[in-house]
Length: 268
Image (cartoon, rainbow, N blue to C red):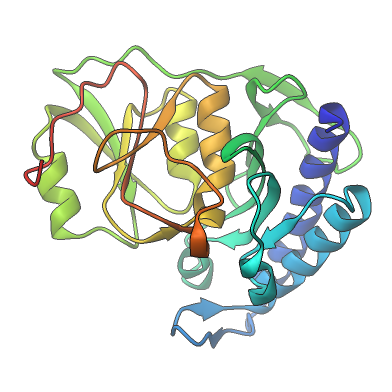
């Protein structure tokens, strides 16, 4: 893989998709409808998916592509592939809360090694650079002209005073009960894959997810966290979370700065 080109293409496509998303976000009618599983989908999901898919297929025609919005891609069997969630956090988008993201990642042998997470309504863009290090870009987000970046990295957590981040839309009693087993000083709530990025940027220490997610929901944020020195582990056995699983469904997981001392689940 030509990693410098990949970084530029993923960044450009994420920003261009974000522009389309924001055009629809600012309309009165977002074109919301329900998918077969009753989850919402909007014109923004579909427009962003079409743009990103076309761009990645043109730039990297030999790399398998998996995307949330194209069911036929969910039968791909590969350990190395591109994976896209064109609009993660559709509920936040529909409710105009701003915590939605564009997500593009590249997985090699089951590990997300490159990724970009762009939150257009928040004005935040996190990505891995050509060398795999994670950065946050600031500026005007011109698709053709990368702006200033700063290297980001996880914190050295204080296990007596952790900062934990969890979902705005998918909190449940099991997650709250697990978090209660830690010494939490501060709690942050965020939507979509921004939770990974907050840990990657040192703005939180720990993100436990005891709920259903798909690989396209997590791959880009996972890549950013890895590039910042963090890790994502399975909840059940604390082994690294891998990609290319049958059906692309994730188990429960724990995203953390490595200094966070994990407590066993009650089932362990």
